[in-house]
Length: 79
Image (cartoon, rainbow, N blue to C red; front, side, top):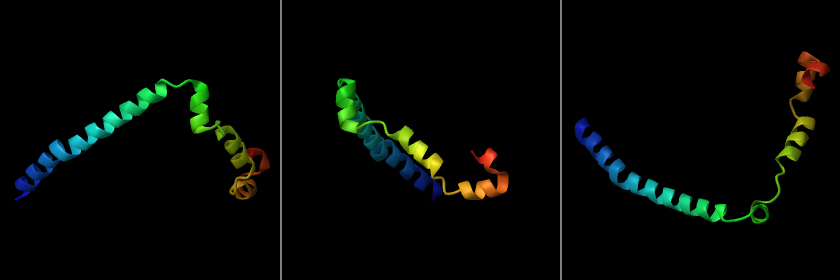
């Protein structure tokens, strides 16, 4: 009975899962091709400016664990 289950699972992977993977990969490659045709200004207009550095600065200054770390290890080590 286990062999039947394994064969069923194998056939599903080789058919349905593989077909879905190939379809997903085709869509991804199509999207990648469209993006590679855009220049940097168009991409920035689509995805917006990079705000990650500003967010990281904010988190460093407003870390909720900072008071606890200050009390455990001291302000000099925490900064």
